[in-house]
Image (cartoon, rainbow, N blue to C red; front, side, top):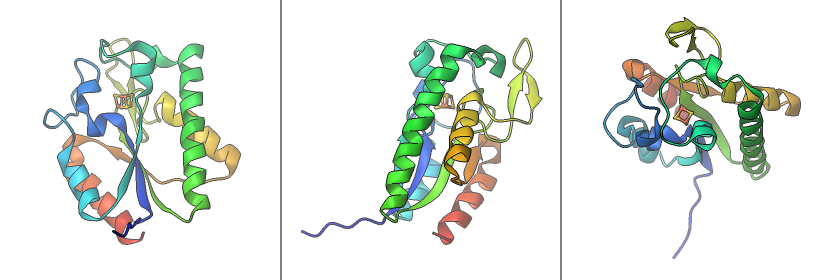
Length: 174
Ligand code: SF4
């Protein structure tokens, strides 16, 4: 039996393959398990997934409520995110060292941790602000330290067709 590596991967936020871990009260979800539309595209194209486990679950567990970024801007959570970001970078470097094609990091817009384009602030966590979440900030800082680039695709379920278009466009160049 022969084995075959496509050597093509994306990093992906854990909750996109398991929405059961999202905070109580969040919108931006589709179906009850994984976001099948995203996974289908990746599976169809022979892309492997490097799942980035949820930093909020590590910090607070599963019983947590949706909130704004301010709640996570503290030393303890930054430490967790920084450590997790380093793990991601270490894995990324392993892929690059073995000539893998890394399409990017499919993360979650609106999340106080895993957003790339925008998240929310304010007392009730409803004021939109155009900045990444805490975890993605830590990833970006480490990428900069290492002089590495990485594409980000921020998922918003209401804009799923745009997200799929972007993923397909990246795949076509891998
Ligand atoms: S912190 Fe990230 S991985 Fe965890 S539920 Fe939020 S968006 Fe998903």
